[in-house]
Image 1 (tube, one colour):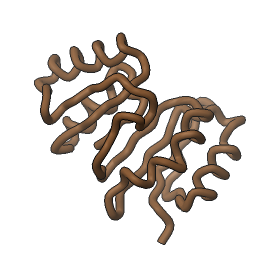
Image 2: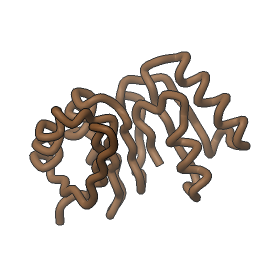
Image 3: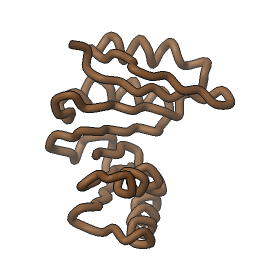
Image 4: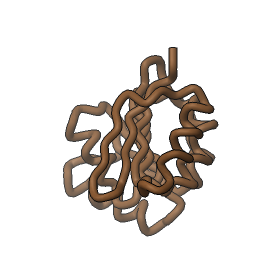
Length: 136
């Protein structure tokens, strides 16, 4: 699993607890990465299976992932989406959230314009989450 914009590491930890064999989390904020590492340790996870790094979106990332999460603002999701395809394994799921409802159409346009199909949409209190796959 790749967690872009990992923040406190909540999605990274959840991924490991739900069965991911490994997680790489990345965030531009050094303090967020430090907290994500600490939260991983509190849940029994550490390197190499649980690795958090400081970086901007995917600038320090390599490899292929079955799940890529991005719980970040719409602008960052729109910037990430064209490049994220190179990190997806076959049949990978790309989960984007943190999208305020008034930006939904822009994110949908970025996803569909880059070959993604939305397989599920979730909304709660004006915030949107999409589960996506590369269109076949």
